[in-house]
Length: 187
Image (cartoon, rainbow, N blue to C red; front, side, top):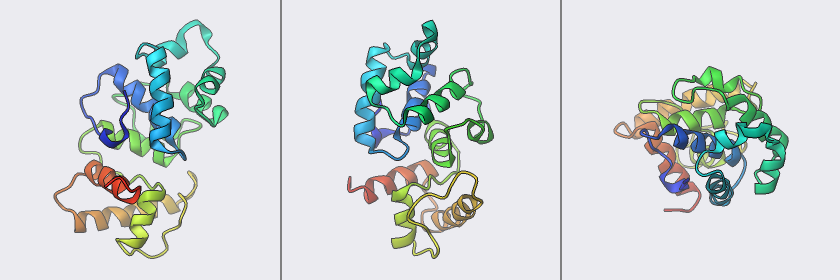
């Protein structure tokens, strides 16, 4: 089960990793609570085994996603097809970014909240707002830079330095979750 406010877990089972990956793909650009409800309904119907369900009987992934309202269907279908047979325990950032439909935010969110010692900044609208308003970094856009833009890596490097400076005792996962809660009004 996906609970957005408790997203960090380094001890997930293989099935839970698949569930989390499904959530990471589905939540991009959407409300976390609404997405979690749709994803959790699908996980329940799939008996907790979303990837097994999608692999079985040559199911039409696009139609399944549409049934559960997990849009955008074409992008999410491509992303799921790209990770269905991937080893989610050992895949790298490079592996994930090579999947059509998975960008910087999705790849970093998955790694950051499923593996200890990962150091990534998930540049979603909440983090970008924090970087502008709280960290007072200049030149931070309102929207996440495109996957192919070098701007993402530049902003991420600046943000990492600022996080280490301001919160040396926090992990990047703890910082990410705390910032999301603060900037989305959950604190």
